[in-house]
Picture (tube, rainbow, N blue to C red):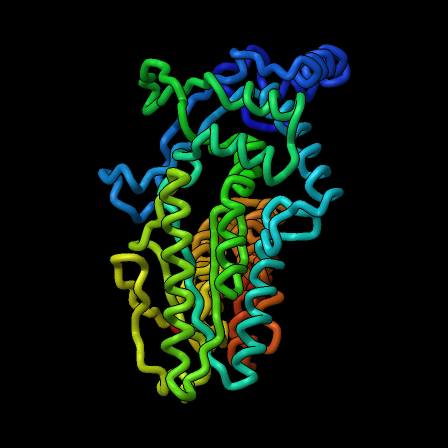
Length: 402
């Protein structure tokens, strides 16, 4: 059951949980009625939208730096959760999942996606071939989905028809949203495009909407991996006889076709936030003769490191950038925890250390297999410092030591 209440809820989330046994029969009737009659109550199609800054360091005066997150009624989320579960069962049973799409699939995660990409890259590097990786970025991806195109694709590609398709139509059409900023509420406005960010079903519908990206990549012979709205393409480069330029042009044509397809589907590829990197040994990278990739009319420079699904990857794939980032952020939080350690008990200290420090070390840590001894020592020092703060051993924080 969702923890967050919506201002549209007549019953707060905590009361739903406390009285779930008493409310269950009525909730079951509402859900059954919605599915059987392929209808979605208009009262559940309303959403309160609160703009959230994407990063604290971004300019708060720039509208593009905000993400519109919808707060929707609890009952709406419950119905969506059941529908989402049934769609996933349908996709799995009929083998309709997009190949190499790791979002919303059992036993898949950002870590499994990164492991797959890392395996491809390291395999090519072992064979003395550099690898070109492009991380595509979409502008306001969830906000511009065309409902008619989505419904048509759900039917033609994923075999959703009959009452299920009618229900999806009822769920998407005639929605409204109210923007709320500092308790100032705007007049409700119709939501003619997009799926609500913050909904349960929205992200799954988005992956179905962008399924043609995989078709285009396969047609061009380009390796790809998808995770929700994160798309990454990679090709090995062979610098003998100038074939690297041909392979580079091949992936550029692939990206151009993807951009055209997205544009026809009312999605926009953002070249300003698209990242490009070439992995390989220092010698292999030196032999390459290009430093940018053409994406339609934009020239995107090759970076020495990129952030991919929350992990920093460097051109030599040593994971040094990721480890340095982990250490820097961990020491920042450890210093702050240390300053208040005498005012909190051991359980609270453990909670803070686990959520702010250990979670960073644990995230996608399978990618750190085989890193250098020096990198391992850096991570061990972070854990030693965390243990000392938790136990309240005598310690003195010194950034210079690390």
